Image 1: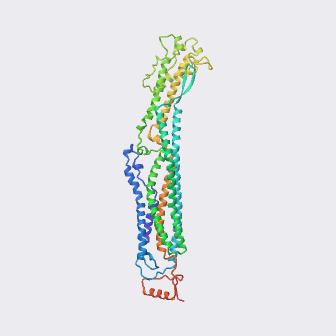
Image 2 (image 1 turned 180 degrees about the vertical axis):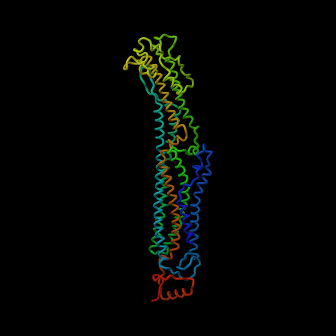
Image 3 (image 1 turned 120 degrees about the horizontal axis):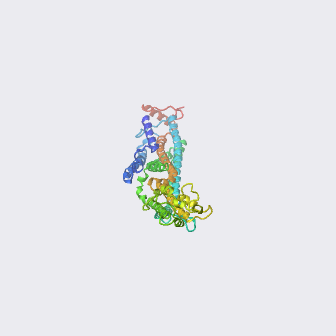
Length: 536
């Protein structure tokens, strides 16, 4: 029988304390898999059922505890079970023969009671620490959410910086900054999304904080109940109180057990959901593949307007640079002097410029950097090099990049018309290069659901880990507390008649006692001089 009880206790401990880690490798949050590409590939109903199944053991034990309470008190006070109201032997329907207890019969329940007091206090402390961690992590997540609009603004400002390019004013021979992102529909959409989130947080964040604090207070009450009840019951055991306090403690313990097991069921489901979600957030932070895109119904196609907006800015910059190339081409129908005066000094006949219709930046790179050079007729024209009509250094071919800096009479002089035309085209080319690089960088970060989730959810990872750990601690501590309650109810019910010895009584009672013992061959009184009275 002892082996059966030990096995049952082991099973309860495993059920109460086992972490929720044995999840199906292929089934993750909302029963999505790593191969899921959309929400339709997931099974939220199945996941909800699975989360509900985790709550079943706790809820079932809560119901058993709830209905056992009236049954126990009815059996005790109506049927005389567990000693009833008199110190009789046996369990139920006992005879009128008095119960005789040895020293260990009295000490044993007290020792168990003291052990369970320590366990109950430990459970209360553990549960309060876990619930406090859960509350603090939830409040931390609210702080992270409130920081989200500023984070979005930082990203918008970053895009602004990436798309703020240098342009050239040929009339004043000076450069200026131009924000290509300003006024675009993409920026307007981003700013609108930021404002919507900010307004929603202002409306609901304080309410959520209030709910979280109320939840923390309720958890404090729940996990403080075991401490108070075991101290009350332990005091009754140590002080030999067996009239009312043990049964009052049993009644309180039934209530505490119901609350703890019910909480254990709820915490088990929450620990599963929080653990799964925070595992995905941690995967995002660790740059691992996750199912968040599928679980949130996010599809890369929904971000196409953002990437299309970037693509449009790049195409505009590339077309502008391409169109300015024609302003550099040497016109064969004009004299060299006229071409120099107009700043059209580059040879566009040997290497024809690309077609500007639908041109991409990549198509311009080789042509502008290597193939577009000044015409030999300009380079050999008398005084052209000295006057800055071509590069003052012709040791290497004079490209548009070199002419933008060297087409001037001296380093401190203003650019010639050739230098100004080259500078205007080349700054536009560099702007197109900057936009193209920004598209490669920002498009990769904002153009896919996984990348965007990484930017937005990574800041939540720290508090999310604490939330998962806190919910798991609440699950384990409530389960251990439920087991402690079962043990304490048994000890108080079983030991209430053994907390003190039988009264010694008078001589007649001793004689009657001995006669009763003599008549019964079934009872074997334990000869303890402190308990069994003897005649002088």
